[in-house]
Amino acid sequence: METLHVLANIPLFSGLDEEELSKVSQLLLRRNFADKTGLFLQGDPLHTVYFIISGKVKIYRNDEAGREQVVTVLQEGDMFPHVGFFSTGTYPAHAVMIESGEMLTLSTARFRHLIESTPTLCLKLLAVIEHKYMELQARLSEMVMHDTHGRLVLMLVRLSRLHGEPCGGRQRLNVSITNQELANMIGTSRETVNRMLNQLKRDGAVETCSDLHMILDVGKLEQLL
Image 1 (cartoon, helix red, strand yellow):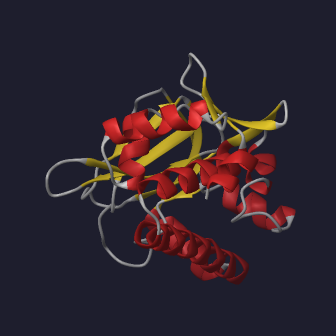
Image 2: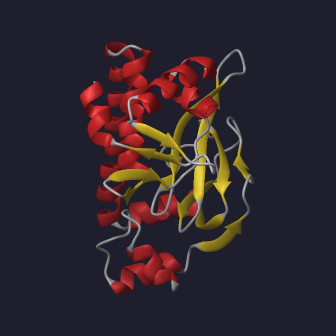
Image 3: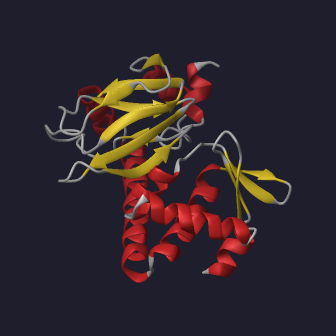
């Protein structure tokens, strides 16, 4: 797929005219990454911005006890990170490929110059950051206002919206997520998630395939809330 067409499908660059897209494409590098490739570590100097063409990326942090906390799973069209473009900083989390794919990369210095010289991109970047901020605020609210069962159900509903594909009236997640990763996302133990998922399966709201991809009945999940 031509880089100009790829750029047009990335929210940050959609809406730019052909001349502007051509200008951007000359700055970007296309790179392939294998499954399980580590892209950067939390605390590393922030020097590259990534735009996903294909594949999936897990963003996670480690707490003071060394436990993994999954922040999000990113896919086609997403960019990351969302901070540190205008100051000398470090990556706020770890990033690892969980499905091989291709990405466009750009140094933070060039990205900063591009944003400063293209007002349209500056406004779009603010919109992207605002969306991520609102998403994190919603997750924080869920952590405070719901018990563990409610947080798991809400996370499954969110995952269906982000990574779901229609499957016989239900939603099949196009990314495999382990019970441990789910536990890390909602701040509980794998054993607790195991028990709750088994109950959701008995309720007919969740089914797990052999490849760890889940099939979700979103209507039933929402009723359980």
